[in-house]
Amino acid sequence: MAQLTDSQLREAVSSSTLGRYEIVKMALNWISVNKYNEEFRKLPQTELINKALSDVVTGVATLEKIEELRKKVKGN
Image (cartoon, rainbow, N blue to C red; front, side, top):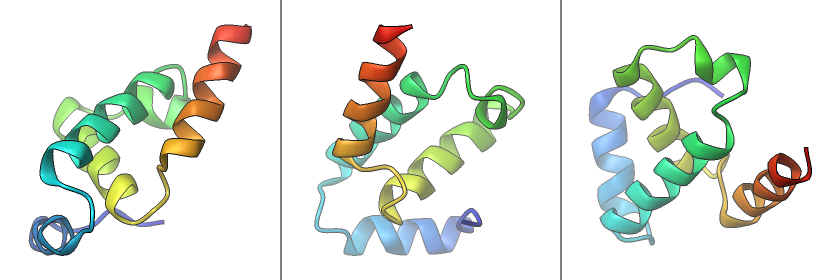
């Protein structure tokens, strides 16, 4: 899924059922479990943060997916 523009991201965050801090927390966790993913590793920090936030507000990154990836990472 394509990343959201800044204005789309602001709108998505403000209309999300998740709180702003929960979105940031999930985005940080999403980055953490994807740190070895080539797609994430090659991004500059600002793009990485934007992608993670976009993934959270669009439903690509969910608590379930984060936990699933966390278990896979710990298993390696």
